[in-house]
Length: 375
Length: 127
Image (cartoon, rainbow over all chains, first blue to last red; front, side):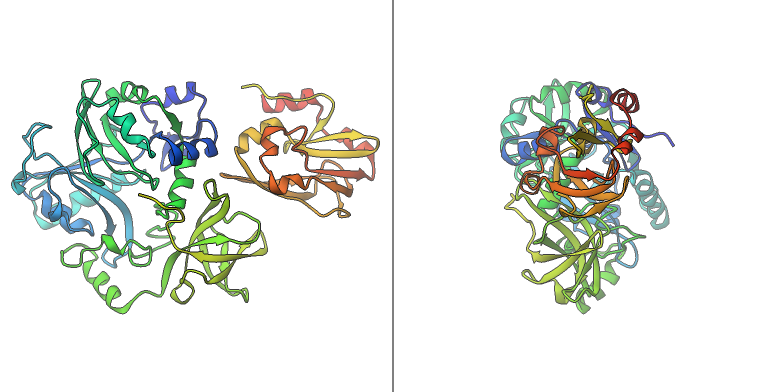
């Protein structure tokens, strides 16, 4: 199957980007160097093309109920312009995907207007790369099964998405938007015009830094991207940044088939609103009550080496107890760090473990995450 | 993008270079290889005195995004390793044909160098 391409594929190529396949998309992995891009985001500001992320739009009289029953968090808490991180779980409480749910201005209102009438509440949520079609089908299937009145549109091909991240992100975004967005709190969003085009501008991101994510019409993507005069960053830096921030990568830190995990194991129990009714809720209530056997931990390698996805984690007696799900040489800390699942009795910060790096046992220590101070 | 390919040395298809001086063969990776790898963050090298066969794995170079095995261009005894790379692996990116060298081998048979690609042949490979 041919790879999907982001609207800026040609522009990235001209800029000298290297590309990688990610979730069926041909995405820029590196523009200058991962370390340069990583440092720009930690110290200044950088912009990522994350147009491979899905965009699904849900509206209609039962939109809130449909979202409530298919995501783990409490959608009813969202006023217009709010967003929340959530898990999408199966009947067993296993994470199928993680997502951010945005509440858009209600259907029929202009982008500038505000309202909170539930009858026409409108949501946009962002499934991970390559999962948009399956997620769309899941929403349609459950909507039909439950007889709910809601329209579900997969708009992944209609919108590009950019992330502007870093301590100086506010200034650079303010410099291009017609309306101020500096007053937005974390996880708040509104439409702001860039080059005369309304862009959904959210104080969200996945780097551990302050910043914004902008969901912009595909046709305006080039003008909007080029309006930002800052370091372009690829998926390579995005990965090192999110590991330092202790954030999960779908498909790697959890996968419904190859690494089935509940939100409690994965450290995102805060996305589970057990007081709401959703697919997987009952299973998760039981797990919450009983406690988990394994948990995702962050660790630092004490010996020389770099932990990588798939490496064994062992006790100091070399008994295999887990697997590295993500690992890298942290550009900020200049130390090898990683994430992996271990039995809860080994999950306390300070616990000494080993990681098997190409046949050699390397000493590691469990650390609290995020590895660095983040917003 | 064009890459340096000095013609004073030979190359392996796996992107190591070999430079012979007075019977000692210095080894590193090419400019093309360091660019493909991106930021090099870790280099694992053999110990001095280790014996290597031609094309044997002698170590590993890791960038942030990838792990790559290293292969010996000639067989022989490792007489020196570039310990500077343990503290400054970025030398491989900054100066792959100079300060970023990795090890020196006292070759058992210098004729093995003839098995390797010339600069022109290597340039064709990476074109």
